[in-house]
Image (cartoon, rainbow, N blue to C red; front, side):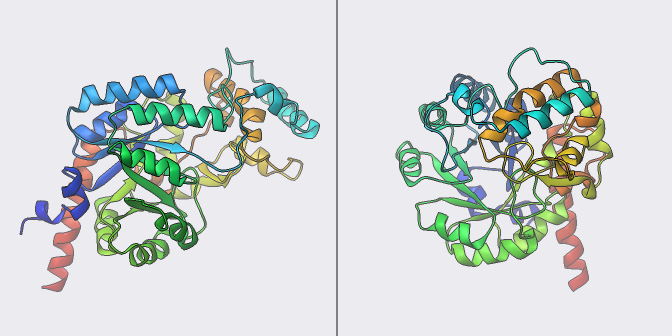
Length: 366
């Protein structure tokens, strides 16, 4: 059997993928490139308007032809019913407003030209329903649910011919997901970027594989090389879920200052903070995370109140490139990416690295 055949799994064959790599990214350009490089691109659309989602998914389909791709929405419980920013602002504590104003003055951040990405709408049932409708009208092949997968949403997506994937970070979350008609689980370890849990990838993945039975599992968190992919397959995963890998790609839109931070970062240059969204978010360490971790900082508010509290400021930081405060979600795997490469080059190196790791193991055993 060739190594190319060894890199195929039951799931990748079922979905028509060349490589067992699911690539998550907020950029539709990168998502299309992942698909065209043989992977399964997934668009992170939680911060996109329903109109943007509709346009971006149609654009991706034009770029990838019949290749499969997906879209990710975060649908947490307990969000406000209405997209009413004024109502949220009226509930923001004075101490939090004062702290944010202090950051603006300390780092001399000019006002942004408009609302930030996190504050141009309130994460609410109203917006989530509109986003979901845009996804269901599309011909995307998969809906990925982060932070909750309501059964009604799963049923509607599957009725429309879409696979449904759930991201989980603990056996408890896995049990809840497996009680629903989920098609794929992503076991996301502590190493991962953005919203992540407390259990390491190597501890988590085998447990979830054993619990899932015939439901395929993808390994996420710290996956950066072919050796990681080989290890994931050895643990019983049928593929990997990667997000941080694409941040340094040539196709990802990013300022030179932020790209430089990513290329210089080591695995120990990431930190988990609640300062962006109110939920744990692994990101590149910066003055932003340090200020919110200081003794004088207030405790970040719950989602979506923290979004509205800091969203405009975060938008202004990015717009005006306030270097000390610049940051973005990234996992501990960022330490492996030290140069700008195209998505196709990253994918090719991953596959060559997986084959080399398999050959090395075979030589050790011979």
